[in-house]
Figure (cartoon, rainbow, N blue to C red):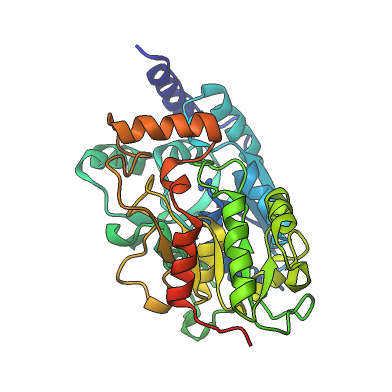
Length: 415
């Protein structure tokens, strides 16, 4: 029996033990505790959940009887801190990373970190996998609220088992076709609506509740001239870290924009993007028309920078998904490891909100993050990753291809 199978069995047994006799017992107290679980690893995922978190925070601003906790991977917690968007929640750093979901000792550590309160509500704006459900069954709680996509046949038996142990579950039904990153903001909105009904004790129907745009407009760092946003960085700690385009190619595109349009270039991002954006800044010829706001804006300010830009140009990351939410034109350096799953966006997304993909022709090793391939293209890509730390389908995109895309979809002659 493999080590992975042994650990899964141990985790299942330990989860059942927690269910039968939780390590700690907590009585329900006057102050209501709410636990929000973020199982996502990527920054793009959490970006599309920020609107729901922002609106939940607005709704509960004057409700002192509630205390919010958020359990997520360290990369997500650090991202929320960096963009000053913890939304008054107490962050619980856990390890929900894919590679450690079969580690028995990390499972026990995650459970102990979370199992410190009675939770009136446990909320997830996404579908919960078996690992998270195994943790939840041992917690003391009142009600669980999360989205549920249509299960495939092979998951029906597993789902039935969890339904025996999970009590007071409020499933927000989601069609499988929309259970993807591009629609996560819509999924979050549906879950948020159900959460607000519960927090209102379901007595007052909340049709009249007006959704807050994210965020309130802040004047600090407001850019008066027409500008575009370029970010060469990519989030640290992601499952697919090799999708960052070459900085020299970014510089080639930036210098073309400055030479052929009247736009100012704004470099934007979090602390994790400082190194890449600094390198890019050093290669730009006309630095007088560059504003570097990397790690200098709160989330509110960052959103306004993206909202008011003529367009955003960057790697496949949270910036592009946020731009789509804000209906801002965007250009994305796109690969094929997750082709059809995240990008390109489907036909049910408004045309004005769709990122403009910049890609090479589809290789035989497309969807390499999901499907095992044994072909020359995959071998060449693996060598490229080991040597240069970049996917071949990303590295093969030339700066000329990117410039042609910008020229085709954005025309603003230099004044």
